[in-house]
Length: 138
Image 1 (spheres, helix red, strand yellow):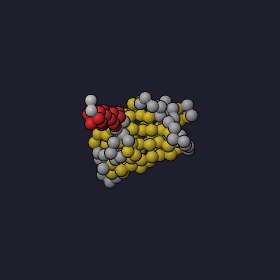
Image 2 (cartoon, helix red, strand yellow):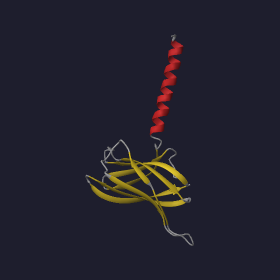
Image 3 (cartoon, rainbow, N blue to C red):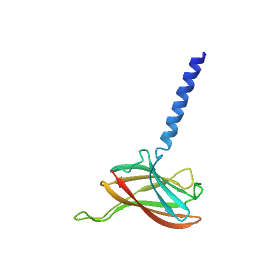
Image 4 (spheres, one colour):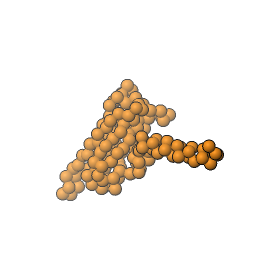
C-alpha cells in the first residue's frame, strides 16, 4: 500500500471509531447541574437542551473532585406547578443503569414548553438525598 492509501484507511477508521463513541454516549452537553452537599448532579443530552416530547438524557452523580459516586438507586421527575387553568404536571423519567457507577440513562416525555423543576432523589453507600433545579423545556 502506498502512503496515501494508508492515510485514507486510517482516516476512515478513526472517523468510524469517533462516530461509534459518540453514539454510545449521546448525552454529552450539559442541560443543568444541581448541588447537594459535596455532590454534583449533572443532567446532559446530545443537544444540551430539554425539549418537549421524547428526550434521551444522562444523569451523573459526582463528588467534589468530579469522580463518579456509587449511586445504588435514583429517580428523576420533572414537575410543573398548576398555573391558571392548567393542572399541575409531573413527567417521571425512566432511569436505567450505565456501566459507569453514578451514571444513569434517562428517557422522559416532556408535555409542554416552559419552566420545570428537575427533581432528583438518590440512594447510595454515602447516604440518601434529594434536590431539585429549574430547567427550561423548549
